[in-house]
Length: 98
Image (cartoon, rainbow, N blue to C red; front, top):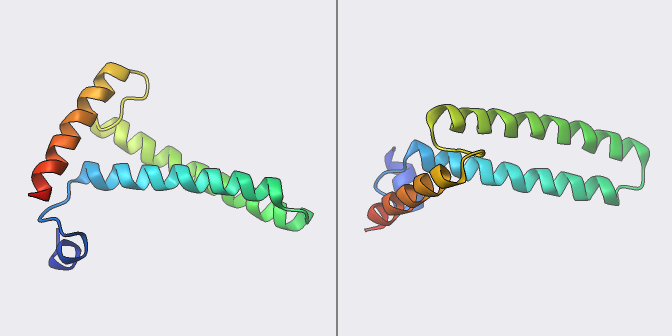
């Protein structure tokens, strides 16, 4: 990690897994936000634009998920393995905070 990110985050190093997980969580939040905005939109053109953005956000989410599955960071169909990975990531995060 470069010095600027170290200063911003306060971490000496940030793992690829941590970055990907944060990106995935942010992506999920974005999907939910678009869905709510579509439900609240009253103008058809605004709704169409939001639907297009939701489609693009969905593709981004799929790409992040595929990357994480390929790297072994995310196991959506194996809860036991995902729990093991999450516990390991938590231990790394605690060590980085020291």
